[in-house]
Length: 233
Image: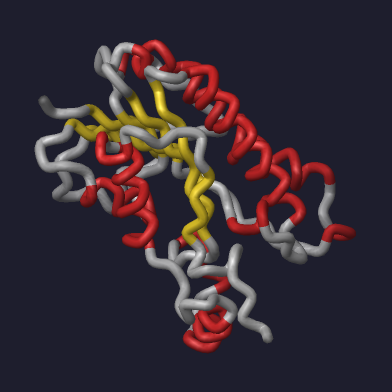
């Protein structure tokens, strides 16, 4: 029996690659501001902005088997230069957008025999990094939300989080827009390269499908070894 997947923000970057990793024959719905990048893909697109819109159940099927919330922010500045509004904006995109979506579709997730939710954090929550105060604060809240929901919604709905290091996506372009920046970022990781959208999408697809049916409440570091290995010595 084919599964139904809903991706928020799946028209480019990691979300777009998740589409290619999901099982053939799946019903895939992408809710995003634009359908740019979806040409030729067998998906249904719903115009949607996480900061302005609420998901309407009238636009969705009667059940959802897998849900991935892909929007995020990379707001790297010294703490002294961060206004409270920066924290509010990051929290709105990274946490409240996910909260509103999950509250809207909870009945559809519950209608599945077993549904899976995948959220995205950052290595900077577990590993303190300078200039990450705002994004790490909001993503840390997202990790707490995920663990709470994993406990509350078990056994019907699984909830897991992927916490990558810097990945070559359009969102990270200003940090990786030339070879020198990419090389510097690569050398910070034990595996000596930055992540790709395919790296993250493959793990997301694993978590969304029944291949990970005995996994929930986990924060999975996908970071080239950065969070757990010290190579400076």
